[in-house]
Image 1 (cartoon, helix red, strand yellow):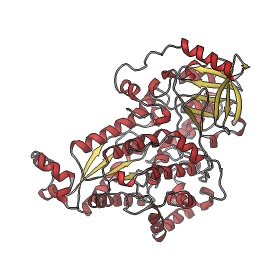
Image 2 (spheres, rainbow, N blue to C red; image 1 turned 60 degrees about the vertical axis):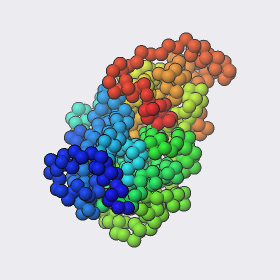
Image 3 (cartoon, rainbow, N blue to C red; image 1 turned 135 degrees about the vertical axis):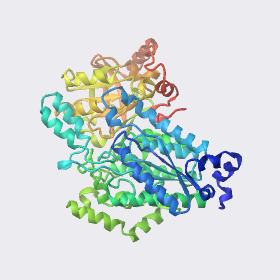
Image 4 (cartoon, rainbow, N blue to C red; image 1 turned 90 degrees about the vertical axis):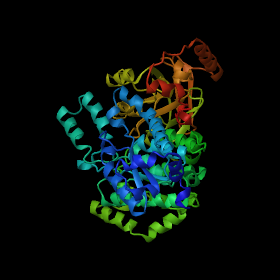
Length: 576
């Protein structure tokens, strides 16, 4: 492919002001004729997952230059879900994913580039960039921004929610709580557990858009810096080959990603992000695809919050390539990747490299065995996946539960509804012991159209950290959960309350049956009395006829735009 065929050259001929403007910001004349490579990152002083990215941006730029291209740095800083928790800031979280995708589209299409390197670490940054890549079809390499180290005694951030609930109940002192807060995040990088940030790093590699072995590299290790330079070189190779992102990512790529998601017990938020990313690639993937693949999938990664080890240990066990080797027989090995080779070819190449020996060296320094972290496929932690899609008269379009984190006592339960119209009221009821064993805490009007679909992390932690409630009640919501959440939590209930879904008309003492094995979520009675299904349906129909929509929470700004245009949670919550 000749340079004259590049998009950047064609638009340069149409825009005579382009050359002088570039010279005005320090370009050399010879730079004008080179392939132009966009380096888009979520760098900023916003959180540990973004603050360390500038060094990776600059190393990627070096890689582009060494390969003969001209790097161009753009920035679209993401927010931190952790810092947004506990207040209305979390309502902006999911909407920010779509805004990041919008900025990728704007940046690329306003001044077209020939390829891109996209760098992010965290919850909405990575999915936002991936959506933008699919939308623009730019030849692209994703560089995951790495994972932070664990603190003393393997302390990690997802433990803070439980410690906060214990402090609120008087079970630990303020001094103890301060120690945990001050030591949970000892470095930059994504939080060190298999929450949404780490899950989406793995998904980027599983989709074939990140170089093999680059997801979840410790943020402070030299291997990540080398990966950044290689990403820049790989982007130049894509520009020269003409291999676009949609040439690489197919429906089979997404099926691979969901297989890996099951193996790692990934965040439930992937059920929002993968369908949204697929939509931007012109591919339709819905929550039922997760149900189908997870049903008999083997869960093999012993990493928090469902397992024991911090997420930095994934690299020590061999990273995503080692996980892929364990489920190799299930994967589509002929899918294309950003290396210009198939997934199967990549797995063979990585065996011939020094990658696994480097992983082993780190692992020996930590004093752990590979099987402590990554179980063999035939000796799994669980053999029925980690996520289930529940449907019924409470969730006609579906809901999601991470059953690998649910106590067995709650796999089948009949509970009394305790409905709340916002999370604040629900968590207050839990912490003040107004919620009793046998209750179902129903939190509504927290879906995409209701409130932007915030995470209910502190409510889940307040429940799961209580020895009695954690095994005897459930949280049911049209909102979502943090990837760090554990315990009996059912989210994404669809249709949501703001659309008049059944969750909007749940009343006190309605009987709710949870049946995870049979994938059911139903209202089976009212006022504490079980009733025939046809009677329940008649009551629900009468309630819906009297229901009136709640006044919109946001009357201006980005959340007004998002809530008016967002699809339902089971489709991905993306804007139409």
